[in-house]
Image 1: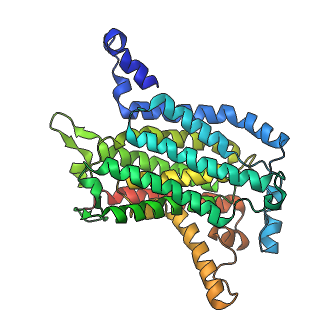
Image 2: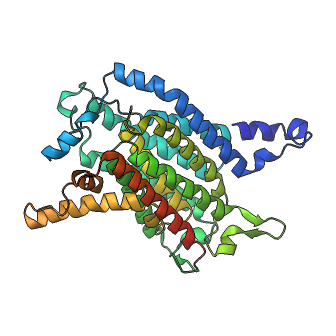
Length: 379
């Protein structure tokens, strides 16, 4: 909004006084991060008090007596704090992003769709208004239907945008300088699977104070860098892009997503102020589902699908620990690989305190981010 206002005033005010900074996506990204941070910090106390009045608290129940005892202190801590994150992201993005950018419009649609899905699920689980669903929320197949539905819409409209972008119609492998042609049906399958998987991966990771929010914050910083590299010029005078210099896919206009992911970074760190140990609020599905979907969306737009496994190493570890645990449990007739899944509970039961698990997973997430960025030069 502010970008469009300043652009409208360019002849009468902004250019006359020599103010061009608003045209730079990094300048607006910094302002979006600060806006998201400020909105989250100011909004969170009010939302927490409202959630407490509504008695929307967490009631963790696990199929493990020892884990139930360890997590007993979480009882009745307000959840659905993702409302704070989504509000901060939307405010910062609407203020500082170019709203005529197709990738920004899809990003806003994505977090609204998945945020709405998460809000319904949380509300059914955490209130007693619909008794038969007060504990379980939406059924898994219902959740998947809406996740697949939102992902299919994103895939369809993204492919339309990619029709005139040669690099976007390729599948790119790390350490290989050329893309592999990708059919539309393959692109659709990859997009749907990635957005759905990352959405669920962040949801599974959201089990300890600050764990998911800290890792998402780290990952969103990497996506700011990837979006900038995919779109922006290294030298406008010679029409050289960072993507061509690093032998990466060049996706025009994707740089505007820097504003979106910077807004996520600011909103997450503002929320983390209240979500760190001992947490005053949890994000719930209303926060974890759209944040995870946004991470997958960023990788799809910048054509870094495989690199996402490295960037989101912690989330992939959490997701696959559940898949392995469930699969092995059924195959072996009741045996387990881990003490409990997702894997952060395994380490908690092994004797690590909750802050130890969270900080060590943050450090692992930082290491994954550094490795992912290092690979960009290896082509």
